[in-house]
Amino acid sequence: MEKLIFEISRAGRSADAQHPQFAVDTAPVPAALRRKTKPKLPEVSELQAVRHFTRLSRLNFSIDTHFYPLGSCTMKYNPRACNTLAMLPEFLARHPLAPESHSQGFLACMYELQEILMDVTGMAGVSLTPMAGAQGEFAGVAMIRAYHQARNDLERTEILVPDAAHGTNPATAVQCGCTVREIPTNAEGDVDLEALKAAVGPKTAGIMLTNPSTLGVFERNIKKIAEIVHQAGGLLYYDGANLNAILGKVRPGDMGFDVIHMNLHKTFSTPHGGGGPGAGAVGVSQRLLPFMPIPVVAIDGQNCVRRGPAPAPASAPAGAAAEGAVSPSYRWLDERDLPQTIGRLSAFMGNAGVLLRAYVYARLLGREGMHRVGEYATLNANYLMAKLRDAGFDLAFPSRRASHEFIITLKRQKKEIELTATDVAKRLLDYGYHAPTVYFPLLVPECLLIEPTETEDKETLDNFVDALVKIWDEAKADIQKVKGAPYTMPVRRLDDVRAVRQLDVRYQAA
Ligand SMILES: *Cc1c(COP(=O)(O)O)cnc(C)c1O
Image (tube, rainbow, N blue to C red; front, side):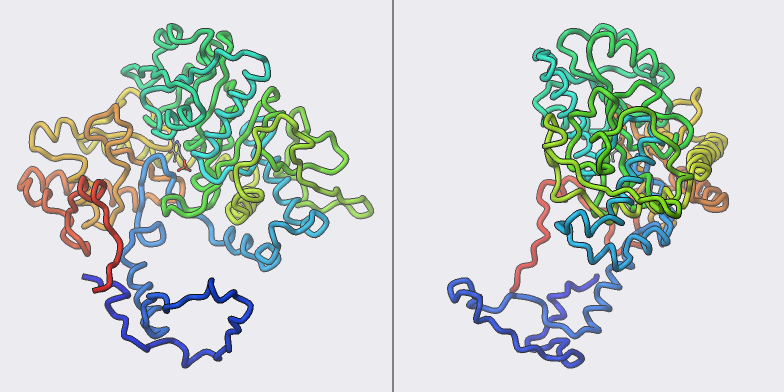
């Protein structure tokens, strides 16, 4: 068992020897605010600290070490180059309150990122400020509400959410003061159109959809759905968590969506899943432009938020004006430019580092590369799905092609040999694989939601299939063996209910 850093601490030990000593002048701090006792920090040498945290980091599963097919999260390898460029000292040294005149390079990158995202999604405007997908959802539904309120259409407080939706969708609607109305999914994985028709009406504020859906299939009736909801006076919200699948291929704006969020930390080069910083940029159609969260970057002197189709940014030179031409000057738009804005959602402009990585990634890929992302993500998912089907696993939606992810269900295995999705997830750890998403979406019993992403090679996918087949064979021979997994991890199977209900990770000094 790993020791806690406090357990290797010994009074008086420190890393001072290798560092110059500073005399700290505490005089400016008022006496009443000064510490009376030393903070209870672990006292270890520098080398002990380095070894401790390096050892801990190696206990993790990560993209750098393992295949990580966590559905709905797009846990793909993100090019190091994006991070290196986003971490240039000039970016890191810029203070978020630096005046616009000192931030023109950064503002140019943000402006171009807005343009690229508009182009790739077919939306009329983009605001980069939300700090997570869920916060992008909040911004989106707040804009939908603001739109109805501005038209004095005050009865529209109902948000329609398919039963397959991610939990953040209904939670967002409730946070925005709306009520949630659930729409069932049919056996093929599409929204039940008859149920939708029956649900829309004068109370409909909008619908929140993920497409491809969390079931891993493309909603074929999206045009029809847009028509039904728009005719009823509602707007369409696009949950962009699955944008990776359609990147460069289909655009939410063309499907009829009025507002979307993109998880830049799933699709655009920031690793997702570590609970680290995110970016949930939002895109809007023409009618929601006035309500965008601020700040937004604009070219000074241009009509504050540009309207009309986006030009092709991927081929434009990176902020460099042709020789002799005056380069544009960029500025932030605030509430004076957008008096109907829903306001500010984050300190400053959002997570600058995540946004810069997304910008560099998009520039590295260009238009062509965006196509490749969608194509290979889809190819890998369909290859893996076909191999698992041929190996005898049951697909949740056997008649459908996968998008970038797909679902297998262990309902039959559970009934016949008591093999559950949890058992498979735990045993996969012993084989060196992070588990796929399990028990989500809730609609499919004993489900594994598998997303290989475009960055994995064929051998990895083949080996993963072999591991799943082996686990199933093991279970047939001796179910207790699988139920005891994992065997090779620092901890064995945890009591997951207790871990949620009675989580206690505080260290209490003896
Ligand atoms: C990840 C995800 C979200 C929420 O995004 P966060 O950035 O984690 O807040 C919403 N919907 C779906 C379908 C997702 O997969």
